[in-house]
Image (cartoon, rainbow, N blue to C red):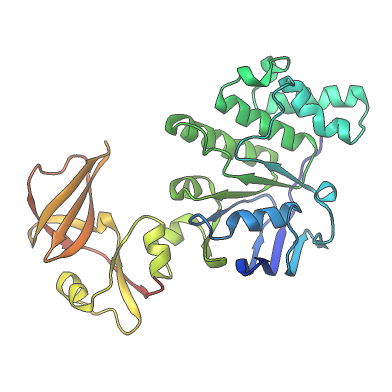
Length: 331
């Protein structure tokens, strides 16, 4: 079995459903073999973008290329893509092996070739022992692996993921995303992953495109998006930064006025406990193990504070802002 990734390029892609513009002039390029995520809140257009690449929707305007070839006029069945759906879309009346073989049988491969390829992809996802197992008896994580095996069995150049881990519990989701990223590195396929989970996108992706209201607002490596957000929306959505919208508040906390049309973004971990800091009232507290998140108010200014380990069990704390960033106010 030969697997290789191709570049994916979107040029000015638009899609409307009646009066609703779901995708509004989206352009980006995914390097061959990389893991690229579309991240954004519900209704931002990320799933519609994915479906247009897959061929399930056709753009009203713009072009989609896989490699150097435009695919906008090709039906889904003729595109070099494969999809892993949110609900896995496995056939419950079939065994694991039969599910993986389905796309190969549709392509009318010889029985011996189908059998060999099924075994090969099941070995890649560590599911060889389950080839004859009925799908309903599998765990959620195992079903996710079968869905991935079925996708790569047809030798796509691009694999598309539509929030495939959202049905798993937290511990299994963390384990599976590590396995998925490792497998993606091993097989070298270009991967486009749709999610609303910021942690998931940051943990898995080479690059992330943050979407809002049908548009891409910033693209970059996860660490760049987190450390250097270009807008207030990106700062607040990716990492939950505090956004100081009142210039007087900005000056009080940082000594800096953000400027016309701009606000200050302050990450929760950059609001620190300091003996000579401002007195703030603690109104909420969440102990998360490695950190404690505090909701505080300082003269009516709501702030999120992230403290390593356990925070003082007090109704008042003294805080100071160690770092901040001035960004355009697009909220």
